[in-house]
Image (cartoon, rainbow, N blue to C red; front, side, top):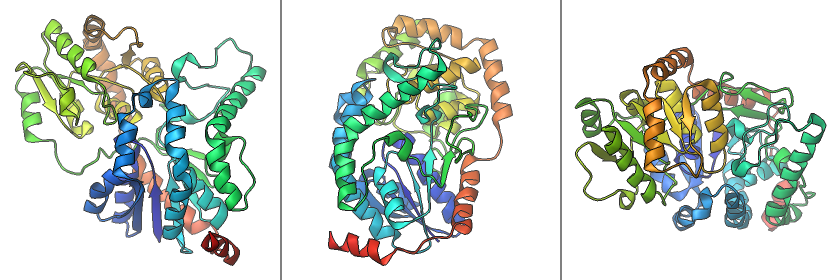
Length: 429
């Protein structure tokens, strides 16, 4: 069976797909990763076929745009960046899945994958990494920019909120998406965030104790648990391990692999460590963001598997990406979350509700505020709560559960062969 994993984004979005691909490869399946070009090396090193959905130049232009992390402008920026690629990505995916036994697993943001499912009848699972993307009036997710549904708003009116969200999606994406749909002989899409999830199966790669299944969620959502793949199968670099073990546990500071505008954050991190007389690790692949002449108590780490690093740390300060959040929860590491955009405010709210971390708003991120919050975070009581949750959270790897469901999807569905009409229509274009 050929399984095609299609995704966009940065490490936190790509690694779960690579991890699922590695799991399926180990079970004897042929796996293709369709992702941004910079991830080719990782995929091919694990034995996967690779096709690019985004060129390296396009990927780096996305990262270079500071609006990528703006709470309100990020959606507009990504729609303008990604909309023109839908047609090209559709054609690339069609070339790969023109086999009766193909199965698609896709990030909901890869709209071309849903088009392939719709036109060619390919079974597809949406891989949902974060609960903050599921519209719910019963338990509304925390939204960026202060746009969360107010708790006082009566339930009948909450439906109007989600209609407004769909209207925004229509304004931003409809022209690009529906232009491709017209060429395929398909009717226009008006409620984007209802359509973009596969009607076959949605795999939530998070556990129910983190986000319980709500009565108004789509019925095809199943929760697998967090996926435990940090981008590599190897060990933590010896110099990083040695630094952690040469003194009191350090504090890890990171804003994710997609953040290229964080020099001020890392300066504040160094100042906070100096104020607390604490040791610190600054994690970023962008060396130009790191202050020059770091003191001996601070170490720069370009990359590390967080599930190996975080158990050695006293706390982690991060942006609230679901991958870092999950790794910290399962490692028993207290978290200070500085959410910026996307699903980050929702993850921050869930961690705070669990009593396993703190969060700081955009106007409270000076070195003094960081120091004060970290002093609360490293208390023994917080560590005890985090360790108790970590021991309870240890269960089956969500990637293994997800792999079972992908195999079930292929085995139980009547996989439609590509119809002659569909292929003829595509070949004429």
